[in-house]
Image (tube, rainbow, N blue to C red; front, side):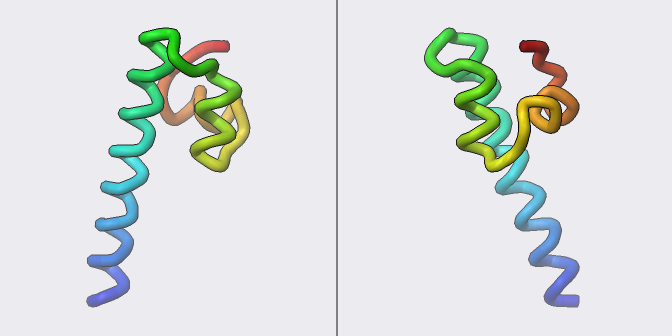
Length: 54
């Protein structure tokens, strides 16, 4: 049960990080490539998870 709760918690953290990075990209503060690097994923992975396009 603890593992399930930890997984839910981690999903929430990832969602928050991606929403923050999405906002920074939309505001022109960081590029999609920078956001992907900060999220620890490829540009293609970030695009798939957020709907952004390079």
